Image 1: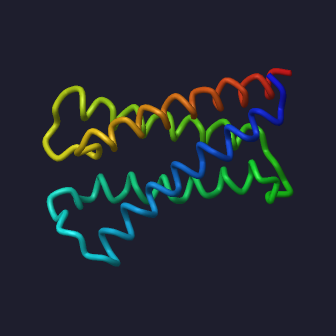
Image 2: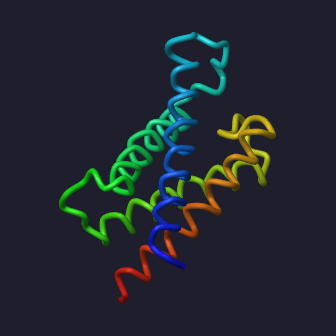
Length: 129
């Protein structure tokens, strides 16, 4: 595939990752939605890491980071794969108080996991070339 397509996929996936995390954290801390059980340390850490890593990678895909390091990008994408795989495992093993507590979050998690997997292949290929 061409680089412009991967850049577009990267921007879209990172917007979804950071946007969902921002919405969940804003709903929790600003609008005080009654999700006290969901708001444990693990779920807040997962959402916060999505906001930080997704935001950083978004800046990278937009070309705002001058010293682009392909290995760093690959490692951050691997971190996203790990955290989203963990969320999927929580749902599949029916863990108590999972991150994806409803079907829409589960569907978005699968979309994000597929997207970051595509980005991983592209980033790995860029390092190998």
